Structures are given as structure tokens and as C-alpha cells.
Length: 323
Ligand code: COA
Ligand code: ZN
Image (tube, protein in one colour):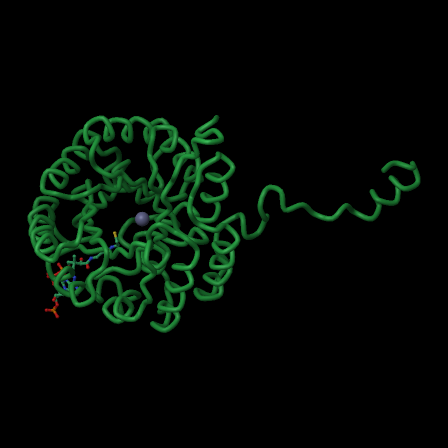
């Protein structure tokens, strides 16, 4: 597949969510100093956007209870967007102490998952988030809305795509600059991703679209490729493949940032980010959380990182007089 040819390089925006989606499910609290240092390291890789933390209830997400301090202390690099997840009015009020470049609002397209994750009905979430959008507009901070379970709910099953697009419309009409279609527990498959992304782009040609997929069933990169072919140019991904919603049964990590970056570069896209720098950060993240991460590139190396020729082959070549 050719997605770009020389002279017409396609720009794709990579948005890392390891510090939010990744850390929220970890068992051990990562010290605030380490989080700040890690975000600062990520800022130097050339990523388009970093989801730094979430302003959720510290009881619901204890790993990110230091959101206020992290946002105050990170060094903002021009050209990098810093976004934070917000589920309600209280979250936006807290976040305005150190305003991010974007608020990433969240609700689920599944009633059951919304009740489990946010402890409110979808209707109540819409009311809260529209109020959050009013406050954000006053503060002149743009809004993106992440719709969890856009491709299926682990408790309800398939979620009607018409409902997903209707939620998107509600927020785009209210002024959101974009929507993220989230595959919260890796239920999406490539043709489903292609259809929903195509329908979204037809219905909302002026709005940004991000794909957020988890690799729970090994289809993360396949789904990202399907979205790329359907015209999507923004992807959430998590360094090392860390991640998962603590309120979604069976959730595991996001598609891995450095593995996705590697694929996009091979497909001829311009990603703005430096792959070796991403790999360095991914190794560092494994040390930070204290366990191995599912990302594959860190273990296998890039496609053309060649291995030395085994001595036995070199010797037999020399005996045969081969070059
Ligand atoms: N930040 C900090 N504290 C918050 C808060 C926020 N955004 N929202 C609510 N709280 C506090 C309230 O002040 C209250 O505290 P108190 O008991 O000391 O008075 C307490 O949390 C309960 O408030 P309530 O409005 O009843 O919230 P809730 O218990 O129904 O929880 C959410 C609702 C949305 C705050 C909570 O479910 C949540 O944070 N979920 C996040 C889930 C998540 O991030 N999942 C992964 C990402 S998809
Ligand atoms: Zn996620």
C-alpha cells in the first residue's frame, strides 16, 4: 500500500497517552518528580501532543492524584500540545490553575461502561461535559472529546455506530474541535474501523478525528493502518504499549507509540517525532514502572537494524572464496 509518494509526504500526528492511559492502571505510584522528568523527556522527542495526566477523582484514579503539581511543573516546549483528561466540572476547575493547551473530555458510548467508569449516566455526562465546554470556552482552551467504547463495550457488546456519531455531533455542534474514537478494550477490527472513520469524516469534514486503539486482541496496528487508509491522520498511542482503563474488564495497553511510529515511517508518513528518541523513552518507561512492557520494537530493533553475520557463516563463505 502506498499512502504517500516522494514529494507528497503525508503528515501524521502522534499523541502519546502513556502518562495518562498508561499510568492510570499501574499498581505502584510513580513519584511526581519522575512523572515531570518523563514528560520533559517526551517533549524532546518531537511528538505532536502529550496527554500529561487526568483531573479525575483521586479516589477513582490514585495514580494520577498529583495532576495539579505535574501540570504546574512540566516545561512546555513550543510546538508540543499538552492535553489533560477531564470527566466533569470539578476536573476543569482544578485544571485551570495551570491551563493545558487542550481539555480532553471523556465519556463512554456504552451506558454500562459510563456508569462503571464515571459513575453517571451518559445523559448526565453530556450535561456535565457541555458545562465543561462552556468553562473551557471562557478560558479559551480548546476541547477534544474522547468517546470510550466507540467500537464495542466489554459488558454490552456492540455499540451502534449511529449512536457514536450522534454523540460526536452533540459535542462538535457545541464547539469541540475534534473527537477521539476510542477502542477502550481492543474490540475493534480493521473493516469496522475503516467504516466508522470514513462515516465520521464524511459527516464532520471540518472536525479533527483521532483514533485511540488498544492492542488487547493483537489488532492495534492493523486497526491503525485501516484508519490511515481511511484518511485518519491523528493517533493516540502509548510508549511501550502501557495502558488500560481500570474500569473496563480485561483492558490492556494501547497500541505502542514506537511500534506505530516505525510502521508509519515505513509507510512513507512524516511523523515529526524521532524514532530513536522514542525508543530511549520507552526503555526508560519500563524502568519507571518496574516491569517489562509489551512494545515489540524495543526488543526486536528496527526492521533494518541488522545483526552480525554468525561466525560459522563467515567461515564457510571464506572457505568458498565468496565475497
Ligand atoms: N477531581 C478531584 N476530585 C473530584 C473530581 C475531580 N475531577 N470529581 C469529583 N471529585 C470528588 C468530589 O469532590 C467528592 O469528594 P468528597 O467526597 O471529598 O466530597 C468525590 O470526588 C465524589 O464526587 P462525585 O461528584 O460524587 O463523584 P463520583 O464519586 O460519582 O465520581 C468521577 C465521578 C467522574 C469524578 C469519578 O468516577 C472519576 O474520576 N472517574 C474517572 C475514571 C477514569 O479516569 N477512568 C479512566 C479513564 S477513561
Ligand atoms: Zn484508552
